[in-house]
Image (tube, rainbow, N blue to C red; front, side, top):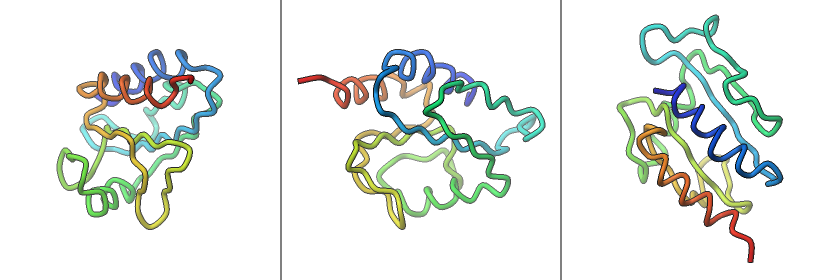
Length: 123
């Protein structure tokens, strides 16, 4: 699932908007059988605007589930999700200014696509 979502994001967001000043944080962790750091391919989202993290203890997924109730989660740990912010969005003790979110990414790809198009629309 995550691989499909990440591949879709690369092809349909990152490559579609190569000049946009995007900052992407990809946080990876083991959630389903077969997930492991040794088998993780950081080149999956091969774009200079992407920073990859491996979260062995799933700290971020647990934190988001507790602190971001407005987005549906897949369980007690949020995973395979996207959170789209505009330039004024903030991520500190809370997440402020979320323009769109969804999980799993591939299922909600049209939502991400539509929100991205609105965000990057040139006046």
